[in-house]
Structures are given as C-alpha cells and as structure tokens.
Image (spheres, rainbow, N blue to C red):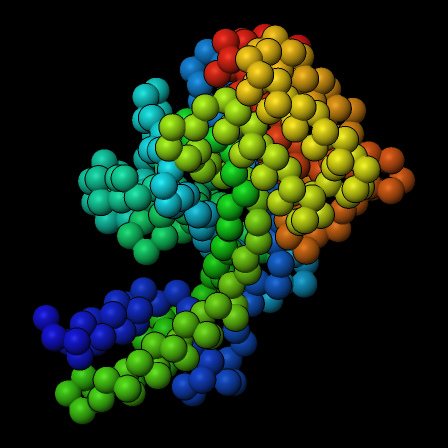
Length: 339
C-alpha cells in the first residue's frame, strides 16, 4: 500500500468513526461538545491472597462543560523496560467490549504492549474493553445510562490487575449530538496531494484535542525488569514525589516526612534488616491514614477541597496510590497482615 493510499485510509477511518465535529470546515455555526473538565474519584485495594489490585472510579463531568462524556480512556501501555504483569486470576464480566470481535481476540492484538486488566463492573449502559487506537476505555453509553451530562456523576467503573498502582493519563471524549464528522469532510483521494491530506489530518487532530479533556489519576502500571523490594521502594518514592508535584499531597512537611520513612526503609533493606523495613513501611501506612482527607474530586485542576480546614494533606489520589503499593511491597516481603 503506497503512502498516499495509506493516508486516505486513515482519513476514511476517521470519517467513519463519526464521533466529533470538525470546526474548521463549514462547522463554525454548530456548537462543539467541549468537555471543560472532569474529576475522577479513585479507590484502590490490594488483595494479599491473590496479589490483585482492584480499582474503582466515580466519574464527574464539570457543570460548565458544553458536552456530555461518552468515553473515558486510560493509559495502560507497558512502560519501556518493564516486566509484563501476570494475567492469573483476571476475568471479564462485562459482556460487550468497545472494539470489534471478541475480547480475547482484541486482547491478543495488544498483548505484550499493555498492562493486562480485567473489566469487572460498569454503570448501566456503559461497557469496557481494549481498543486498537487506545489501550483501554469505558464508553459507548446507551439507554438507560446515556452519556454523562454536565454536572452529573456515575460509577463505579471497576477494573482489576496485577499491575502496581501508577499515575496515568485519562482522556474524556464528548458525545457528538450533531451527527457524523463525515458531513464536514470533502475529500477526493484522486486529486488531493499528500501535503493536503497531512494538513487535514493535522487540523482534525487539533480540533479533536480541543474538545477532549485530559487529566491524571490512578491505573495499573508495571515495575522495571528484575525489580527487587529495594527497587520497589524507590518506585514508591518516585510516585510520592510526582503526587506532591501534582498537588495530591498539599503540605511539603508531610511529603518530607513520608520521604524520610521510605528512604530509611530502602536503606534498611539494602542492609538486610528486613523486619525494620517492615516496621517502617507499616508506620508509613499509618502516617497516610492519619493524613488522608477522605475527599472526592481529585482530578487534575480540581479543588483540593478541605485540605486547609481539615489540617489533613493526603488526597484520595495520593492515598490510593501510596497505600496499596506499600502493602504490595510488604506482600513481597512475606507479610499478609498490614496492620
């Protein structure tokens, strides 16, 4: 297939999707379904009997959004140089997936490229699955659920994975109530040059990104290859620092105190003092419990809520990032009781 034909095929696929308006070509008079913002309220639990993490999400569309949310995509690509987590014990209870063909066939297409997950629960009318142009999503709401309108919340969306908790990108797609994007494309593959096709593709990508909303929250990721418990503690340190930079830990003193315990735990591991490490990680978890706000609305750009008035400084995103990962390290050290 030559380059020009490949470009035409790409454009044809975009047209056939029919999810978004193209505002540059004859569409200025129609309102675009912008997602102005959304929040994710996550909860993550680690099961020491199975080694599986369970992720639950409540999704809220911002009241000032112009569009309703019809798809929530989340990054589960396998990081470069990471180990592929196990699929043992994972199952799929959602009957319909977003991609063509069976879920098993779809997974085979991306196997080895993504962290394996199982879709176990979604609100009425929503489905979940792996897809070809983005690794995982919840979406395509149908009656009685329907798309998520401005100001509304829905959930829980539930997935399971052996992948450790990571900070990952989420994307919210708007529902296109105006019809197919194909009405706004006028393409003649026989007369259009490659630069013209590239220009349309670039403009389409820009318009598409403008109506979507991106944020950070929690989803499965994978540890580096041959990662021992000391390496796992370093991973936890790195995630804690990212959480602080994102504003998920709202006080530098609290962040530094958590750092001190993790650094000491890493040092004791390297010195072979496993029991001291276990005690430090348990103390780390107790500190998280004491500082956890227990609040909602921790999406990127969201308010930090009652951080100052409650005098607690660990948001939901930080708490459910750090606690299950600390428990996972304890699990790897042979501990099953995390109290």
